[in-house]
Length: 546
Image 1 (cartoon, rainbow, N blue to C red):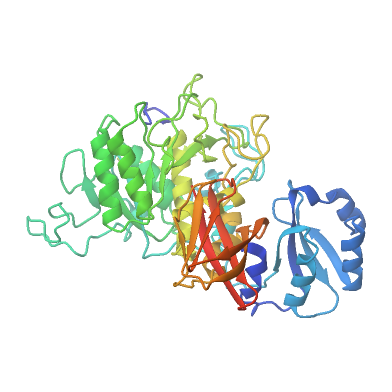
Image 2 (tube, rainbow, N blue to C red):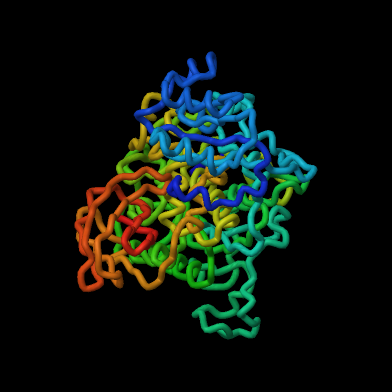
């Protein structure tokens, strides 16, 4: 990472959507997303208000359709709002359209009410923050309208849960900066008495977190990297000063793992991960990287995953292979984009630099020319930085917003939400359809993530505790056992979370058990429908494949 004047080294299935509340639904409007191989010609739809599919066009006519409007990711052209002249039960309309088997999902178009404010913050320099709202006027680099995260729209949904803790593992923080006023994490289990009152292994870690470099309780920033990174994620918004972070309200835990030269031992990094997880951080950002793998560090990343704490890591700035710990499978590996949605290669500070890429890349986010906070001043807002270190905290901030609206999300579910909601093919020719090694699953979009139907995954699961699936998580192509069933014939159906039926199989339970060989699915979260018609039994179970 670098900033001007200083050199810095960076280191559910649709069938189940009926169960959602429609108390805010007052007009007959539904949203449909076509399967990839069923997409209509969007030009034809917009011009003639028809899909040019006889069956669906007849269905539209019979139900007195008023209008068809493209929505969602308009470049994909697969999601539409259908509005009908005659009010009728939304569930009936949804069922009719689902039966066509043309759609990934069908859901109602809910109505909300404004609360009297527009969530464009009044922070003095917000116009510099193209990552949140890009109108194409950013002056320091080529800029494209809407090459941003749509965070301004996301803030109408949530600005962060004050009870949530976000851990920043970096060079520390300017603890008295007004952008973090009242939001530094306090360890309420600790007492200032020179001893380890809460028995967590750290004496007097009362305010902020811990300095793993100097092994003390003062994680003050002596370099600048950490204050900038923390500000991107967590600077208070709408406070008339400075900048707006992605999350305006959540608590900030600081783990200092980089020294005044922006370097740190892996042992500091690993220890800090354990500290953050054990002290109830909900998400961790690590804008650091090294070239060598380490069992210690990988075990720490895996520990966070096992404890359901997502770890967001920058990929590195060498325009080369992804560094560690971003390279580990249980980390979120984040690359950087420019204000015109191209991959950052180079960054503004070196012609040979660039956002690292490769098979482990998950997502990209804005990271070049990022104005931010100064670790030496409470009033200087004129520094800008660039690097994957600046991209990662955007993603960590977004994850904290997702957890603010659904605290029960697992790491795998968060990954699935981001995969489904990120914007694909918005960059240059490197940004090919679907996942690619330069842009991953795409550039994150906060608004699309926060409006994803996947956020309500737990609403669609029948948690019959007696019936178990083992092992879970499982691996593709491996045996799966379903236990504690009534003996008899069953139909097993495997669905994606968006409702696509991938596979069905007729099986028989004997001795209260079914054993099947899993199909070759991609890694992710799926729903398993277990149905016994003779006993009128239907059970839904969530299945994770890794």
